[in-house]
Length: 171
Image 1 (cartoon, rainbow, N blue to C red):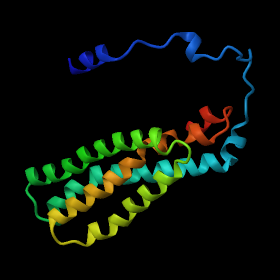
Image 2: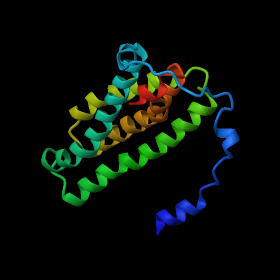
Image 3: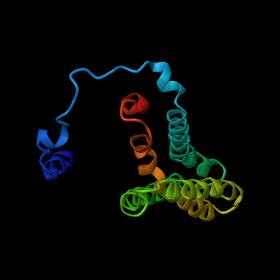
C-alpha cells in the first residue's frame, strides 16, 4: 500500500520529444567490449563503485554481529546501534545529491575525494575504540561522509564517459 501511495505521488513522465533526441542516427555504432574495458575511466568508476559498495554492505552486514560478539550488546541494542548509521546515511545521500547538483556540478572531485577520504580515515579509529557508543558515533560519521559521495559515484560515469560508452560503462 505504501508503494502504491508513493507511486501515485510521482510526477507524470516527460513527453517523448523532450526525452529522445531528434537527430538520432538510425543505427548506433557498436563499440567492441575490449575498448570499453580498456577505458581507464570505466575502470576507475568501477573500482570506486566497488569500494563504496564494500563499505556500505560491510557496515550493514558485519557491524550488528560485531556489536553482539565483540562489544557485548544485546540483540535490541545492536539492532538500534546498527540502524542509526543507516538512517544518517540516507540523510547524507540526499545532502550529497543536493550538493552535487547545486555546488559541485562543475567539479565533482571536490566533494567525492574529501568525503571518501574522511569515510576511510574514520574506519581505523572506529575499530580501535573500546566503547560501543564511540564505535557507533564514528561509524555514523563514516557512513554519512560516504553517503555524501554516493550520488556522485553513481552519476560519475554519466559525467566522464563518452556518450557512446556510457551504457556499456554502467555494466
